[in-house]
Image (cartoon, rainbow, N blue to C red):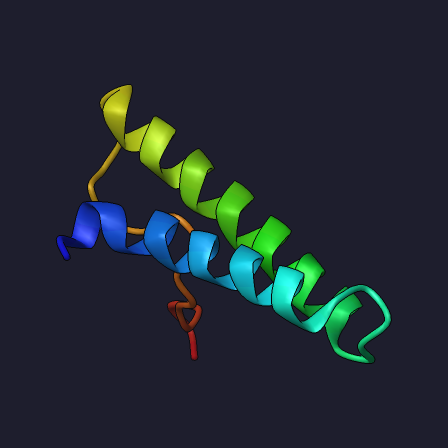
Length: 67
């Protein structure tokens, strides 16, 4: 699995798990939220890089310069 397609594969796997556990499972809303948020964030970063943006992850956590 390459770095480029590992995130979509993991998102697909999580969606399959959502089908397995079903909407009545207590963790279903959390998993659904994570799948949606990660998929959206990854797609935004991927699209931004394809349009010529920096290759680094725009969603990474960084300490402020004064910290």
